[in-house]
Length: 198
Image 1 (cartoon, one colour):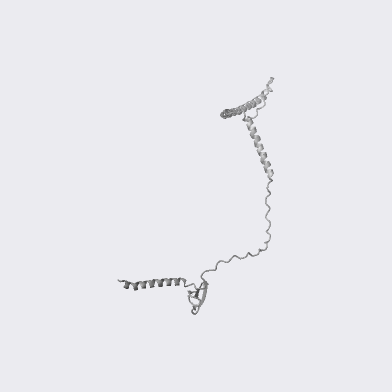
Image 2 (cartoon, rainbow, N blue to C red):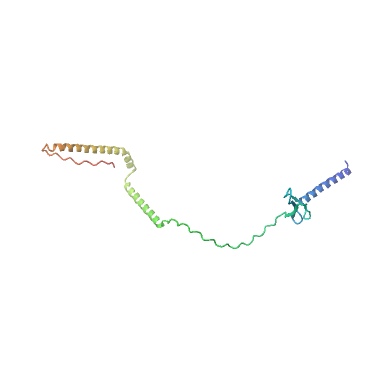
């Protein structure tokens, strides 16, 4: 194919591309008129009521039973904030709340705490005095002797019961022998109190 044969083809191709570009730019700007509005017709009555058709501008006439409408393509810029309104009237006074529980005076609480601390310090000092001469070996010996002390307590309790039982028997025997004899029998000692382990 020669250059002369290709020229009309290239011209046709350029013309086609140019027309596409122009039509696309025109269609992109088509809905918005020069005044910044979009104009349309909407069906006011009959079947299809509310249907909307965008027109090319304000001069286009709408068909019968259709009405013209328009709106701005871009909204207005935000307005400056208005002046603050006047202050409203003061509301009615609310009901008085319930009275709270009365608290304790701080001095009373502090004094009670001081007294308890002093009492504890006195007890600790007394305990330190008691334990002053006690060594660790003494404590171990005392702990080791606990079973022996318990055994001795049990035996002492049993011995007290036997001694009191013997005294009761002798007292009964003395009542029988006393009128029959001229001998003065020794008086039986009083019963021992019940033994209590420390």
